[in-house]
Length: 172
Image (cartoon, rainbow, N blue to C red; front, side, top):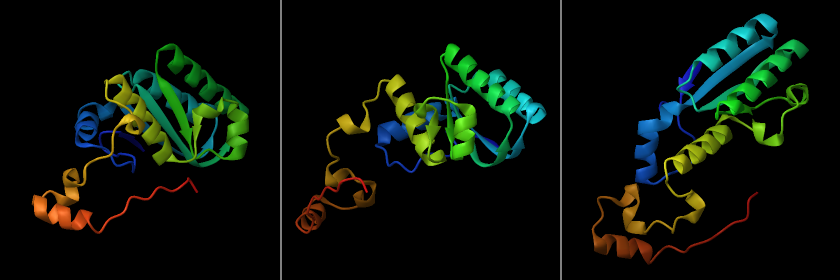
């Protein structure tokens, strides 16, 4: 299965400007779901298709359902990553098994735990390319600007705010 980042997004909540930008340019992210055994014939077809898709600046290869990966297929996929990098494009393998990671022998940044993580990384990079600040550099969103509260007047927001406390938690 093949789809674009304009159709499916990461679970990361983003501000309105970032959402609008991803609506406009999200098709620069392509996601390919791989399944079954990868060997020369089917991998070569995949590589040709990925290289021909010049509209995809970022390529996420969902390898979670790959049953096996032979040496020739792994070599073709490594060559694909090299060709994409040379063309200024990015490839990320999502959900690859430990044996697939070893066979592919790519740097750690070429892998993501799952498609959502890979999509988020691609969205972040695409938004940065478009000149939007990273989510970490933005100030907190004022309570009144949350979509959930768009129908609240200022007094209602103030009442709600009086019952809230900010808390931060470490990852994990």
